[in-house]
Amino acid sequence: MVRKALFLDSRSAQFVAMLYFCGMDALQNTKLGLKLPTDPRWVNLAEMDLAEILSDHAYCEQKATTACITLIQAYPDRTELVEALAPVVTEEWGHFRMVIAELKKRNLELGRQRKDMYVNALLAFQHKGGTRDEVLLERLLTCALIEARSAERFRLLSLHCSDHALRGWYHKFMVSEAGHYRMFLDLAELYFGKEPVWKRWQEFLQHEAEIMLQLDVRGDRMH
Image (cartoon, rainbow, N blue to C red):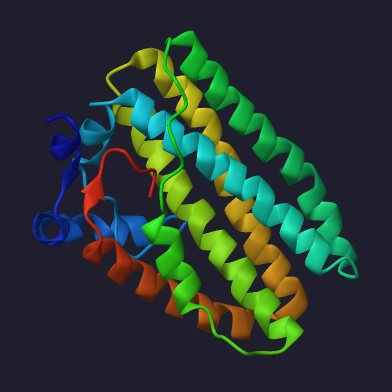
């Protein structure tokens, strides 16, 4: 019964999103630049089962760590990338440990990793069959977008979570993810120039908004 209450179907989400478009201009004016805000009911859904949302959060941090390591392994010749991502690997793994500690503190257990439909949809949008450099651009922009959406959701939790002890905790994640978002964009602009990056970034942002409208709003998912 609890699990059924932890999400809204995509049709309900689309209706709320359309009502929420009035706040879209304000969101576009932020440094994140996301095209569509998170459904305002997501925080309430997330709070219904902290074990679920914290477990998903933990795996998001683990996957972020892996993504950075994979980029370093694939592009060891990109000195700036290696130097920028090496400390992020440590930071993201530290975040994973922070979430595990929070679960333990609350006598909650880490759940199983679930399929991330949001990230998979972004990966499917990447251009396929390109050169090594073209693949790098797609991967950097994908990472930037995941970090931007994560920062936006951590901000919501830091502002509206009913557990005030968690508000400051989530604020730290928000600041960190926003910094990572900017770092990935900066790396993309360094290697490929502002104009090409901006053009492709706008395509990613538009597609991400469409993904958000199509997915159910789930309280047991960070994305």
